[in-house]
Image (cartoon, rainbow, N blue to C red):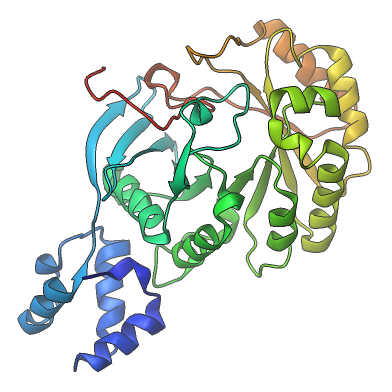
Length: 345
């Protein structure tokens, strides 16, 4: 039995023709799945009973299940999903006034072991297939009010550029008019700094947003916080990001988690300004660090955070300060993880 989410429109049209049905039914099927959130062929009422029977016989829509949901006091929802092989992944739904952002995972676990992130604590198991990532997104869409999902960020567990082909295939599907029809500029890929992947992204014909996890203003500090820096040093990463921005004419967002006593002093802000000087288009997104019980880190005091931001702004840097969402359900930045005891609250 094939997962129907493996197909694009042309492929499903061709498949239906081989089964003796009209190609136009492919759009109807995808409309039910991606637009209306109907995940049961039997409920697709504008299809003939014969076609519905064949679809149920030959195709599947869902191969995972939600085993637990959590809702924050701020409205953020975290979904714990069990995949076909019993692996667990987490996805997050973040409502904000007129937008709803879905945060999705791209791997089961993470191999990059950043010092401030829970995702790598239990190690890496495998990449998610395209249809598994799509399934996360469908669960998020169906769990939101009025089936609304306006933005997507690939910032959950795992490194998107370490699962490049499946992530790009997913983006093309969710961007397609016959798919979820989410505009490319409302889709963000976040990376810890995989330089070959960034260079490949620059060649894609999609105008998605690129977010780079920086978190340090000098090479030694970044290697301490992010082991990937030993393979792709900071100076080379910045050069690749400049090349990406120049080629695509797109802004690069640099994520900077502020950790008390580690990277939050004004000397670090000064180094950061110098590091990003000469950028055509860039933005710094300041993120106060979130608590992870296994990691001995904490956010600076509010005054220190605002002082860091003020310095960057005074030097002409575009800066945003991320509002904490979902911290009380371990759904904030750096808190998603591979293993979870479902008996916990």
